[in-house]
Image 1 (cartoon, rainbow, N blue to C red):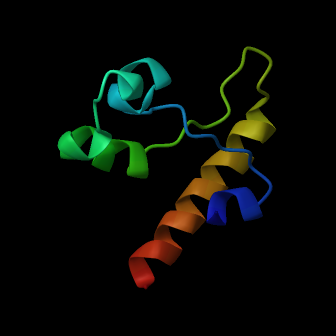
Image 2: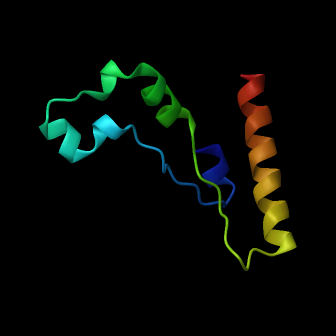
Image 3: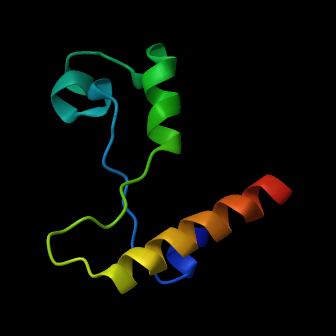
Length: 74
């Protein structure tokens, strides 16, 4: 949320496999896979694309560092 508030779009791209509809319908529960569930709660994808400029890289880096420092201060 803090990174996003600084104008950098982030997404969650890692979902535990048991969270997928196919596996849920087979009776799997992501709660039975605590490591995968924990990872999905903590991982985000940052902007990465071919035309990413040096200025955009600086913006992303500054947003991540500032947000991380804010979290560590709490």
